[in-house]
Image (cartoon, rainbow, N blue to C red; front, side, top):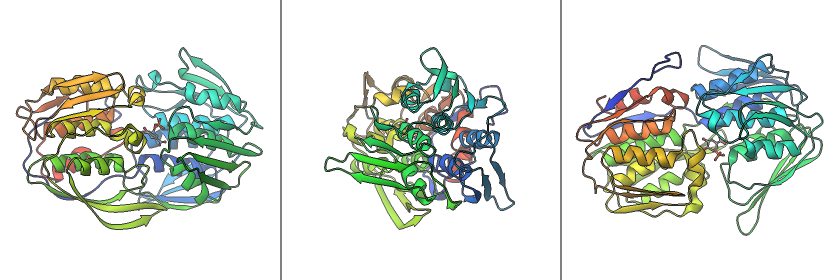
Length: 446
Ligand code: S3P
């Protein structure tokens, strides 16, 4: 299950005995990307502990190196980054290979937009299908220019503008990637860049930019709209960062522990930023027994230890307004719904159609293949739950180069009569190295 393997790696997951134990998940992917990018823009040495060493983050590291940052890891696993300063990024000599990573692509496009350099972005088959107009449009207004593949997709070449024009922008889509791309571009634009966010999305960029010393302000209006203002030509100061565990990775053992009868699992050091913790709330509403112990702060982010006890779940109809707070967790939430009592209906999820795969279609097809009755909706899915009974299983499930599809059906396999076969587990390495070993350490037999 490594990037070097060019053949699909199928795997079968079978019914598991009660899961038990205490585990830690790898570092948060969103925070890891931003740690490397912001450190690369600070003058001096930053240290990062707990960086996620998944392929997506390594794509960001390679790109920042190609643009001048000095990035290395010491014997204790601490990453050291010597930055070039805001405005100091160098022209990369070859195309920036973003692999499977939409976050690397869109945030780095923001960085390049306000530097006087030209960069070409390439990616895998999944990334090359994803829409980039959501970033090329605002970044063009800041002065960047683009030559893209049809449909504003990768491969694309962009020329940054220096000086760039600061932007005042209302987000047309609830996307932390778009917000972050604009803020990162604004770092090197003279004047005030302002992003208006009608629906709040993950706020790691805002927290971390402030932590690095940028002059950034967030105002929240009565209706919840957030207005973020950033003063450009910022000077960032190097930082020491500790990356908390990724709640999006914790989601898989969390749902597995709730579903497999008799389980009791602790997941330590999980990030619980409210802009990310929507799945915990949803699973509790479904009847899940999840207790947060030792709430604390790590690296400016709320963190806790989750104690999860197997529970009978009931169907839900979650409010679409909570989508951004669990946007990456829907695939595994659909698995939880497949074992709940009654029908669950998820709506307002158009954004899922443009993730690493079309997650509504990919999940609907996979769920049917393992014996679940589902109705695919334009903007969501309705799922008939088994009431806790094992599902027949089956496969091979087509994961479409989507790590979260692979891990979601792995969890379903732990509750199947005949096992669930996944066509390719390699994409898991993009975000969750050690996923299989973690499940095995809890007692799963794979
Ligand atoms: C991310 C934002 C989300 C999320 C992605 C990571 C980020 O994407 O799905 O995995 O780190 O900013 P969108 O902003 O496109 O919703």
